[in-house]
Length: 593
Figure 1: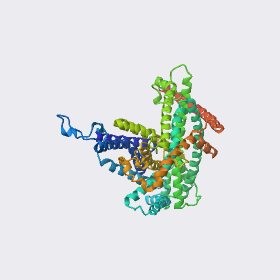
Figure 2: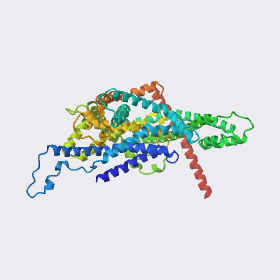
Figure 3: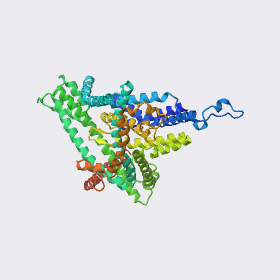
Figure 4: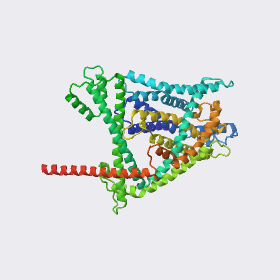
């Protein structure tokens, strides 16, 4: 049964990672190496999260067997009982349904962990530079990637050497290969924990609050208007930037004739341009005179190629996001009208194929059930967030046990209820992952990193998300094991370690990290939660000119009004187009008759 459970988890996690990649990436157009690297990084991180509860239940079973072997009195067989049955493991130590045999998990964790570290520190940064390079050959892209990553790799090497010198300064420590691995793992986990706490402090407050606020259609509609106003500005900027870049391409296209050595590079750039611009450039070349433009250099064409890729990608993203926002705004306005209508029927202004059925069910969901369901979910998530914050601030206390997660696991451990142990671990880790990963999917770093659904995410952002996942997941799992007191480096308890903890090595090698940073730094979550609750980050971004949705801000109100007016214009424009299409259909129908 354990082998079947492990196989099912492996397949389900792979399908989940593939679905997310299909939603955010473009499986047909993007480079195969980019898709493979991103898929592998997401898959390995999700796999760690799903397998860790099985590791915890297996470890608890082994601890039970060890305790019964060392401390249980000899069992006297009853009259007529089989000697083998009497000397077997007590009933309390029944093997869990998901028990994984000895030797499997240590090998599994080593392969998964070191593969993910190879991806995040070496391969994915290289592939990021390779994908963004404007070079026209593979050799040129590789050369650009190596040059860009030289400083990147040098920084990590400097940090590792610093830790190495710290350990070497203590003569009682002998630098073996195992200890060198521990130093590297500790450095990577410390960096990951630093970022993990920042993202977790935001997600623990923002996720419950977003569900509570989303229960109100008025709030959702106002926020959608705000997004529409911002997206209109971004859309106009993207269109202007694309037009400027296309002017540069047109100039190069006219300057470099078909018998020139750089013509192949120009043709490559042209293939990346939108079809309408390609046709326009072709007509302009046919009508152009003998005017000679300045010939570009190879380096200039490489920079232009990179600008074209970025401009076209950004233009496509804004167009898709604009269309999605319009549909959301129209839908929310239709729901608002249906709520005040005596007819229990959700009427869509612009019905599509998936809007033409189940209108009564949608009305009950949107107008009756949705608000209560979202608020109930928000309350449950808020309770989980409070449990996480309390446990992060108290998990170092083992006598008494203050961490709520440790209390739940120890209560289930006393009953040897492995199903409850695994479910409690899975729900806890899943909630932590949702808080962290959803923040990764939400954040946006200017135009360099932005995960956009509907196949609009560029290669750089996909690989950057893979890097973040691989760096955040190991410290997240170690942090969870600390919350449930199954990491001896923090709890200082004499018990069997999980297979996952065993591959991390002894954290006592760097005591100032295991006894200081790992224990006290997570308490910063409390301050970050307060900052998120009072929107301090959003207000600071507002002051810097990056507009955020804040309900009591005058600029937000202005943008909401602007977005409402834009939606009115788009609604009239779409209504006219639909009416015109209907009139043409009627004329064609009667002309045929």
